[in-house]
Image 1 (cartoon, rainbow, N blue to C red):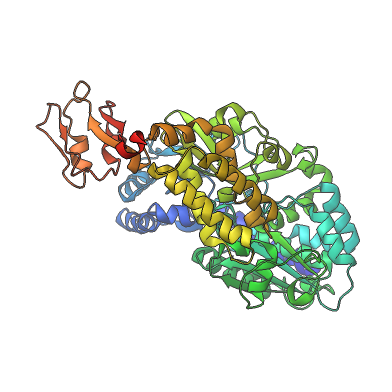
Image 2 (image 1 turned 180 degrees about the vertical axis):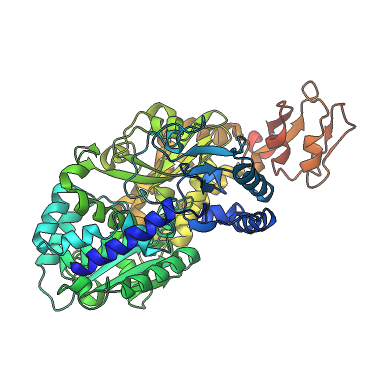
Length: 625
């Protein structure tokens, strides 16, 4: 442990120099969300501004702090003041912020978000007192957005690898006892108790055991694992070391989709730093424990999120599930005992070892201890990555943290494409594995997609099921054939070509697929259909009997018109119409040519006066029947 003590001392000194040194520090959020919002351009603007005003400052690239809707985010720490954060920074704002802060000694009030100090500062609120952040409990995301993910010393100075150092002084059985007592369940979807999985593998005799980190995050709208790796890769890697030591494995794999290039770059960089620091390879931190980690890039097949499919992919085979038992903890990779844990699960392990099981159990509710990260997206005011205690009501997540939807709330999809649509009347449901299952949904890896009145639940069910059908490996007939027939029925409903009795066929087929499919992909695929039929059946009926889509999404069932009495002639609709279907002089009611209209909905979305209406198309052939 003397090796770690020396490493800790070195890291603390470097971190303290950054915090208290004379050189000002500018932090830039450089995760994928920041880069997508223009952070690379902001970085160049910062460099130009420093040169322009003859200033010196250290630039530190950090990850995502979770408030993705405020990206690009730039923080400044200088003059002995607390670190101050600025949001939605573009190139012009970056220049202005630097000029005001360094030359005029004041903050850019229009861009300032908050500060990270303990007390009040210059009338600026604390950053974590923002409505989106104040209700959260940050455990696995503790370092995200605050440290340089490519600097191992930043991680160690903030408690990193202390969990590993403590674990190496314990017996593997004692570690598993601690994890079991903490009650942490797998954060990848099913919620299986982590301690049981580890002990099963530990007690299975074999000459070789494996640990796999499942970073194959394939849900549309989900990015929890990606942002955690991009922002704090060492947390996941430390968790892998602890898990490997506990189960008796000497080889670890990170299975991550190749679509996550930045996460892979930061993982590889972190692994090189670990090797140099003696944290991987032979005799980790001078102990008898040896452990190597390799990265396996997946091709992006959704089914490879299922653990037996993932194992086949790591082995170089086609990603297809197999029947269980035997479970991977008994016979997994190369028929050897294998533990597969999700990114978030592994990222949480170091905190449990460092602080103890009792500390961890204070968060969450009985049977669902700890916190859970979610990607909060869709028709929500404040989108991003959040972390809340299990048992938090959906209403608190959507309204207190997310700020609610801009238009009338309709539903929230939990658990990705295999989850269910939960209506407004069930928003007081606490988020636990069991309660979500009771309303027809699942926890999944943690995607939350918010929908408003402009969302058609029939179209949403069709979209998710079409995704699942295309991602099906095709091994079992219920999933391969059943999902295809379900998609065909939903497409006919959206086109106004279905009969009323199709609803019973759809529901019957969904239950059959759910009960007979081989793996979790097929077993959960019908959830979007079953929950929308359960909670929004009237909307299906409108599509079938009235041939009308109330959300104005299914283009085959609607046509757009201009309501003359409401149209002010502002020409916003004219400016966005791609076909010139809307014409008219400014300040006078416009006209819409139905023959030119492609029903792209752009005019409806931009109109501020409800002057664009969607009317049902009279399907004469069906009406006559």
